[in-house]
Amino acid sequence: MSRWRRRRASLRGLLSRLVVMLAAVLAVLIVVAVVGTVNTARDYRSASQQAIQRQGAANAFLINMLNAQSANRAYILLARGTDLQAWNQARGLYDGDLAALRRALADEPDLLESASAVDRTAQLWLREAIDLISLRRQGQIDEAVRRVDTGPAEDRFLAFRREQRALLAQVEEKRLDDLARNDRNRELTLAGIATATLLALLMVGLVSRQVWRRVGAPIDRVGEGVSRVARGVLSDPVTINDDAVRELAGLADAFNTMQSEVRAEREQVARSAQREAAQRTERKLWETVQQGLLPARLPAPHGLRLTARYRPAERALLLGGDFYDGKLLSDGRLALMVGDMAGHGAPAAAQAAGLRFGWRTLVSVNPDPAAVMAGLNTQMGTHEQRADGIFASLIYMLLEPDGGVSFATAGHPSPLLLTDEGCREVPAARTGPLLGVLDDAEWPVTRAALPVGGSLFLYTDGLVEARHDGEVFGVQRACEVLARERNVALQLRVRRLVRAARRHEDDRLRDDVLVVAVERPAFPRWRAGH
Image 1: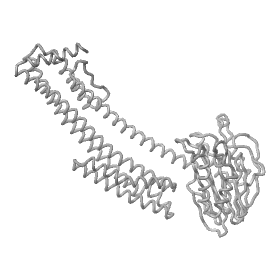
Image 2 (image 1 turned 90 degrees about the vertical axis):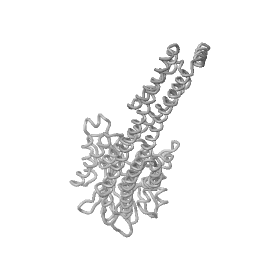
Image 3 (image 1 turned 180 degrees about the vertical axis):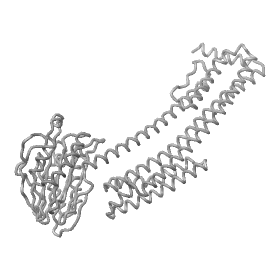
Image 4 (image 1 turned 45 degrees about the vertical axis):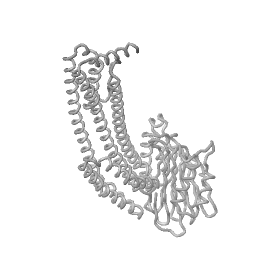
């Protein structure tokens, strides 16, 4: 350290003893080196930060609109309150995101004009989205679904995306122009430094080596770093020798800090784009799975009300095996089925979808519960499926127009019956084995009745097995909820039943929950819902 200080002191002493011209030349060198390089680095940092702010504001606006589209689409398809809440939240952020975007583009009239075009197309889509929600609430579900998939909603959102991409392209073009201008300034700065250094070397050869080591070489390395940034290479920091002057060492540190911040911002933008792509893939995958496991709608038999509620486990995308279906037979009987495939993931989901479609075929040929169960067991009982441990529990129920009920179960929970006298479990005469376990087995048929004003509830074990501190939700608590909610609408009754199980498990579900309910009202009318 003392040796370094002596060299610095001897350099300053030498410079103080040079002629006035040498002092002027060296002053020019220092001023050009420090001020020019600092200004160049500042311009780079300012241009980069401005471009990042503009891109960040545009991307934030885009992400919020994508969230609004996803929530709107999900609400139109599923009518979930959480999706409507997410839609309202995204709408509430719209004005703030637009104001932030305009502030970021305030000094560029052409970019502001593009932002206005983005706003106009976004407003058109928002009005269409509001119309779709209105249609959904009015019960025009088919029209709302059609318009959200192929109608003006899709076209207007695509128009918004085109304007958004055009805006991002203009922002990128502006960033490149700023970089080019800064490159020219950097080149002028380096040229001035080189000229001043050449004059100093010509006049004073004695101090040339020290000047180069302590000033010229660090400046050259900073210039290389600026050039790398101009080419988009942000991985290599600027390193300078230990005896470089303090100003240049600080400049290199500032440049490295700026380069690190720019790299972090770019990586964050890339990660955001990857997350967005992953979310789109996840949504498409889940929609495809739902088409196989869940029917688009339940039948609407005269004299009965039907509804279903499916709540997947609250974790990352993990395809479950809960499934259900309903079919109105030609003789007026209603066939209902609820099943739970062992395991999770794509294999279980594929087997569940196949079992559901096989059930529809068997019911069309011979709806007798024992015969249908035997046919489904044959479908499930392949050697490969047993080797993989794939099996399913299932309850199949036939309801007569006069209220007669017959059902068979394969390792599945018995249904619940709610009447004016209370709620109770309707036990199966004898539960048959799980589907796919045994080749030859029987599934006894249980006879019961659904009285006028009564309701039957078919469900998967995720409902009654919801746990809190080791205590399950259970059939008794389920019956207590149903009895308490006896006078509310069937759909709301089922929703509150599932919500009670969820709250019992600390407001989260570790397993999928599925409930299908059928009611025989005192004044029959056509009605179906999910």
